[in-house]
Length: 206
Image (tube, rainbow, N blue to C red):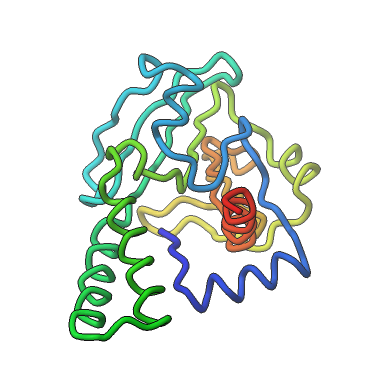
């Protein structure tokens, strides 16, 4: 899944200010929204874990029951604990023998931020990265094209991989056997979405 490095985040922030192109929203779910936030909004009883062989240790997959859409709605979350722990160890090593200085103070501030984040409950650390919707009735491709415009990528079926249409604004349609409708639609967050999220979060923290 997509993660932003420091340099990439800086570039994305500049890009977002110049060309704020948001991905398509779905149920007003926000980029990197914590699992705890979604459980509060819909109640924990409506969020149930789903088993999947492809899940990695830092991922959490669940089904969300909602009356707002028909069909099955699945959400994928990720946490970055391993990345933060590695960065934390590097920061602590870098200031271990440094005298007090502006650089050392800023580094210790970053150390404190990483420790604070890692001390939060897991449901607050798990962040939403993908929304998967299996509609009750297939959605016609003509409807999707009318809404999102011409796809940026079309891929024909190949072996175990089914045909898809992809829009760079954060939508992937998995095509059914009739080649005229989507049996599954995935909503993912673009770099612009993530940049705008960090800009809003930083502005709110000031």
